[in-house]
Image 1: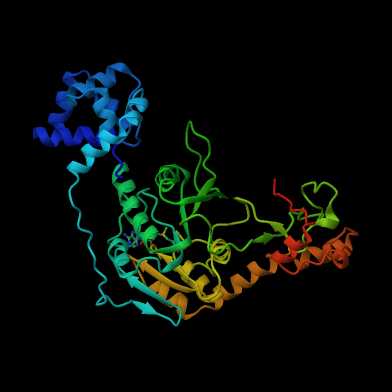
Image 2 (image 1 turned 180 degrees about the vertical axis):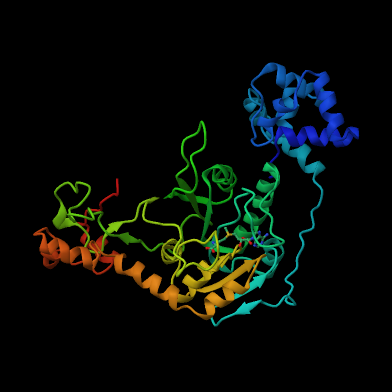
Length: 423
Ligand SMILES: C[S@@+](CC[C@H](N)C(=O)[O-])C[C@H]1O[C@@H](n2cnc3c(N)ncnc32)[C@H](O)[C@@H]1O
């Protein structure tokens, strides 16, 4: 599937007519369309609702609205029944016209890793080329945090400025590769701003099984005029096939007031039924923070936290499984994989040296991960538990004798644990 905007179709028509940009706009002006009338159709897949604009575009394209919708890759509105009642004929017509596509098979073993460890290999270059090194169905989890097409500054040779549809089509190409290399039941996580993830979800829903759209609460910029303040990233979580090959529940502490250590939300009076290992992680993550402190930061910008990667990797893999990240960046995915005993494969088009240095000296990441584990899978972190005891508040220890829960299977057998939602 390829993504087109109306602007792309107008540009294609201009190319066919041999028009330069200014000739194209001059012709559109004759049809009473200004440059700014086309702007909304450059950065979205919508069709004009304004009749004057629609008719001007259709005249330039010499098309009907039905043809335009077909060009955009959709069933024209109002024709869904006609389409569905004639699928046999349509399929026959399409199959007759199908051109035979030769897939490039290039398991080029001549490409050497930039760096390797006992557990993983990092390759320098464009992910679309490097994916060819990876055999079908060989990876347990793919985590991808690509550039967001926001025209941000990256290393030399790396661009973050593409057309709307150019970005999506690039995305679709490497997503296909992620799907190809994942084992049945393997997990795909894609981190992006919500705008792009809505388009990617539409694409992925046809190919993989949706698990969650995880909202990662983070204030990442200045307020934008006439819009809601953007305060979340989204993490798409899909699996290949019907059920995940691995899903390890993650637990986090009960939210407490930093001053008085009381619980922030009411637990409904079932505290003695609560799981001493913590609250089940929800799909809204409010405890992930930007990596800002220079002591733990490996590059100027675009570095995800160890806590986020620990969650993704611990949830979807077991020791010895393989994690792939096509957009290595500062190497967070690889550092966490190493510390958790996962194998890994990584690509990075920009500077690979920072990843190499990071993996050669894992002490800072180890300390950060230890801090993450001080709070993980516990109803109360030790420090909070101590303070609560001092404040005369209950802790899980008050109930632990009749509420032992070693692991998740313990949960299921007992069947009595009450899970708290974070809401
Ligand atoms: C948002 S950053 C990833 C940050 C990473 N998750 C971390 O925690 O450090 C995206 C990275 O993708 C790299 N990149 C961009 N285009 C690429 C491509 N075609 N192939 C491989 N890497 C690419 C960029 O150089 C950048 O380092």
